[in-house]
Image (cartoon, rainbow, N blue to C red; front, side, top):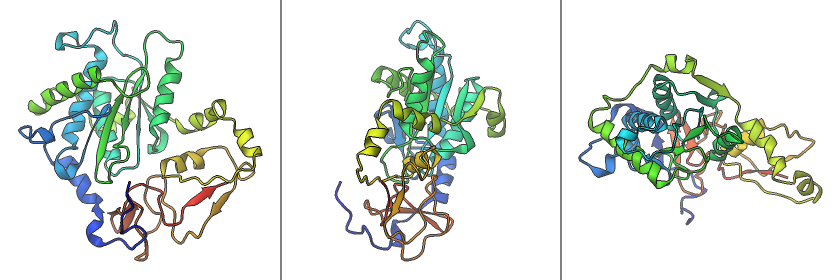
Length: 320
């Protein structure tokens, strides 16, 4: 990706994304189904778009989540390929730090709870990288033949800050294949055309307290399991100097891990502003001298500025 000519320079006001408007459009805009661009359209296992363009709204998430619930039940009368059984194990759901990922997860939980789906989310409204959800699915399904788990990841991956994404991971833990996504996409658009009349939903206050909703720490088990696939002692004893770009979510993993100062040390190279929190927001409003990230974009929220890729700053921390 080409480096923006604005990288490292103060952010022009016209480049800041108004997160308040973004969330408002997420809840208030309704997709125009006569516009193909505003219909549900699955790419790499999921739907991506922006509330500002009417392509990622609460209506989309309601329809997609209900379609996933219908898929899990194995609705053969709607043309679903017979998989021999429904997916009736738990559904693991995680979100990233994009501005509308939180609202989208809450919307999805309202539908999942209304459909009685056992749903497990990251504790304390935390964020989770995609591999964390994949691992949770695989660990749960290991040596199981029935009542298998699947998952949802609320992320547009590397897309800009004004975008949202919603992905479905079936029982194999990886991205859903086209036979699955095509069915979910068609069913979601069917629901949207009917004004989401077929969507089951309960208020969020009920959904988060529902007997089917559970909160777990996905992060620490994932971090602890890394030692089973990566020889940490060999890396540590080699005396290598490793520069790591935490990018917000992996930073959260590092903060949540049990690796203390005795196991690794942090070298901060000329950091002149607060590092973003795991949610992507600065603990203090960014100063006027704050600079743009390499992509040349930041976002704003109630006077605070945020990076398009949380954790990217002019002077980034290194882990040695």
